Length: 291
Image 1 (cartoon, one colour):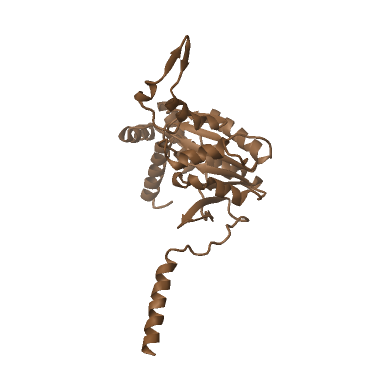
Image 2 (cartoon, rainbow, N blue to C red; image 1 turned 120 degrees about the vertical axis):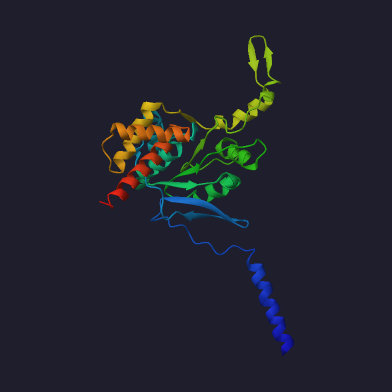
């Protein structure tokens, strides 16, 4: 009997160890109530997870990027209405509203059936699996890939190229990819890449390395560039965020503080303006005792 008990104990310990290698049973995403999701992996299994508290930002709260908003909103509106639309690549300076704009578009069109699934760079190899899981759903999905930057031999780089335009299987018409990157071509460019460039007559023929690097960005139908803000644009954005936090007067003192804040951070970006407004509003409310 003692030997049997020992054997059972050993079996229980072995099962406990084995269970660590198997992911728990995943529940179906809350398609009815959630509008934002993430692609997760546990072990070798991937699944779509609902986001309980997505970032609620209004489209009108973003200023200084009027032209960019118009172009991407038009594309998104076409997509939500069931018309043809393009995959979008948003590139440019950091902190200029690329990611915030995509989140704002989700909030703008969520009631019309728009949904967003955030996919991290190292999960891009699962893009086909994600598309298959949402292929028959009635909602319209944006696969959101934020802050992309690749080396050309990364598996996610090749997987994204195939899903955008290069697979034998077409991507469902209820899916678009919106990606942000600080680099136009999402891969580092080196001086040595130009060494193999050939000149034939009056024509310039880029090297195969350069052609490979630009081939990914070319698969996005819509390119939208974001630029650094000048001082007046930065102050306008800061004022906009101050109003959002309940401070409606841009006094000379507040203006000076906003400029000092940007100088300390070495950037006049929308993100810096938002951080300044958040800090100033919090400090003033603290001094006023929360009134």
